[in-house]
Amino acid sequence: MEEKVVLEKVMEILKPYVREPEDLKNATKETDILNDLKVNSSRLVDIILAIEDEFDIEVSDDEADEVQTIGDVISLIVGKK
Amino acid sequence: MNTNQAPQQIIDKVLSLIPQKYPFRFVDEILSLTPEKISGSYLVKGDEYFFAGHFPGKPTMPGVIIIEAMAQVAVVALGIYDLLLAGNDNFEKVTLFTECEIEFFHTVTPKTRLIIYGEKVYFRREKIKSKAWVTLEDGTLIAQGYLAGIGVKNE
Image 1 (cartoon, chains in turn orange, green):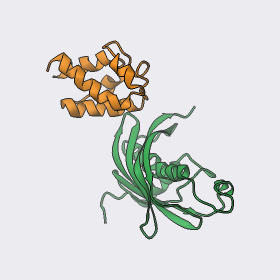
Image 2 (cartoon, chains in turn brown, cyan):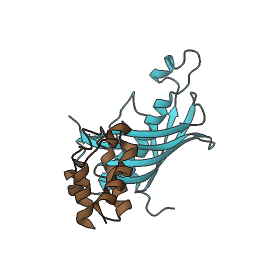
Image 3 (tube, one colour):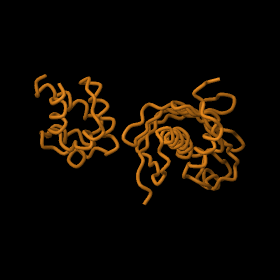
Image 4 (cartoon, chains in turn green, purple):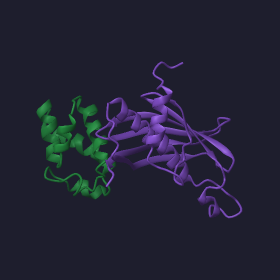
């Protein structure tokens, strides 16, 4: 799966958890999910579950703990496909 | 009878481990308990502190307290049972509320018994999310929705 397609799908998954939709529009791979997008840290669990469903992959708790930026999410997904 | 039903001594243990205590305890009994589902009850006595102001002369159980009762059963107690089943007997953590989406259908007045139901949606990375609903004893639906909480160190 192309990285661009993965990025688009990840942005769609993040959308309901981002406080300001404008922040997501300006997001890049370097954007920090918790700090820049102001996502509630407990919502990371929901985001990881949604990613598992969308991309049909399994993400361990340790791998999930390493996720900070949108780029981290992309690398995680691409590495498993 | 559901063979997954927890034995009474485990139900008693879960109830005793719920960290919320009087005057902020809104579950008297756990009526049933399986790894996926729970039900509990709370008798609204009428002498709870919040009735003095909510509302003077017309005691009505605050929606936020109904949500708290749902959380104590469907998130806290069910989460404790999950941890016990996983062999975790270390309860230095407390479950803090993270989010909820609840709708209300009926008011609650003193001298009524609430039956609170919970069904686990998931338990992952210390976070539990449950579907929950509350009825009166005659089945009248009071509230329903989803709640979640996460275990954090009790410091």
